[in-house]
View 1 (cartoon, helix red, strand yellow):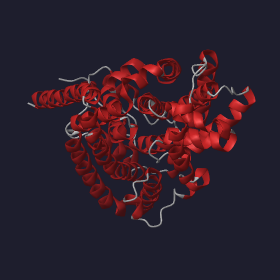
View 2: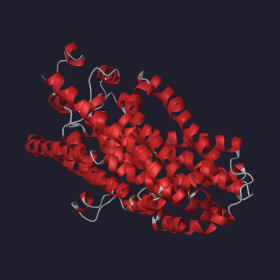
View 3: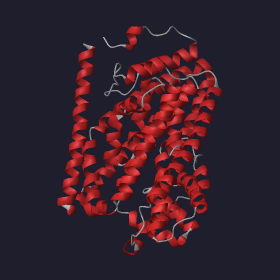
View 4: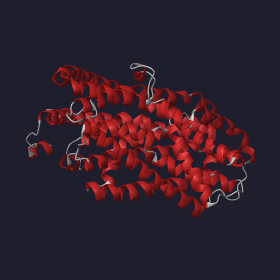
Length: 459
């Protein structure tokens, strides 16, 4: 009976994501053949992404509170966070180097004339200035009140308060258990609402794609095809090469199986051009694959602000492209200095619409203002490049969660293998795993018997 029910649920969501693919194709056709209408329906994509963003804060809050409140040692959380931040720093540097190498080999901007697009960049330079920079970013981590962190929509504020609440419940001991049970019930409600919202994904995908094609036209894509192809190929090499080798070496897992496991999240990101749209599902799937809730709750939200591998590659290649297009190529020392500044500045622009362009414009304005006008050339295709950027950032955070889980021994390797081999399907209807709660209880109460082999293989 349960097997039949699970199969029906999977089939039902299968049709949902086929509908998303159809909606993306329809959006491209409408934007191309009826650009006026395509621009008018663009708000559908924005509304859908806003609905997803509405759920991010409660998902993160519940996940972290449940994870931290259920473990005994606060030092465990600190170890996870420290390893994650160290890993993010190293991988951002690697991504930076790869982008520099490809950009210097291809020189995709050579010989282009950007004068006609110069006026379009002013908005993004203003956005970058309004973002406030790195210090403003750090200051914004602390909310003005405990409850405002749940309503501001800022991920790191929710993370900060959830950490405080989790440690507070942890210190209460058994007196905090009723609070944990209440938060667990709220989490199930939050994921149920999220499941309902995801059924609007085809509408959001249609509006988003129709709008971008209507505004840029197919000619804009063709004009800058070399930059786009180079960027996409670089992202693919980074995901399946660098991340794939690292994942195999540390965990023994296959990057191809992990990508297959996260296929629906990739489709959602591609349709909305926003990795935030898949953040709640990534948290749920990382718990399902066998990573402890505490590790998932710390690594994934932090990674969305600090682990920006795709953004690092984008900034390096876009900077070299603009410099070549303006006929003012950068020397090696100028490239490294400017791009290191941009990696730091990207943290401050993480919540700004068009953050990639805003960071690019802000960095050029502060270091090489004579190149600022060249940013206007890539305004038209930034939406298409932002999809690869978001997919790479998402992949980096998924791999980071498995790596940190392995390094801190907060992962179940047998379950990882079973899930990636499709032996334990993800419950699309609830997105909440009972095994995560059981693991948390075992962590609190002490070692428990290992699960029977039959628990890892479907009946």
